[in-house]
Image (cartoon, rainbow, N blue to C red):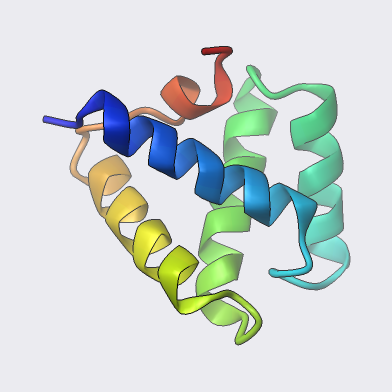
Length: 90
């Protein structure tokens, strides 16, 4: 089970990734634009997922954020969390 504290932590990680610089590249800038324009949509969830996965491949991602992203991706893959929980207003 995912705790409210974990959700808040992961929201913070995702918000930092949205601000950048990591992950870097045109694809991730587009993901940021989609997340800003339509966070609650299917496209927004896919953009968030791509941003998270891209962060793991970018050396500019901090160690702390990389660890958070790994736990977050594990929770998503295991069905313990839906990205909607992170993208919806508090």
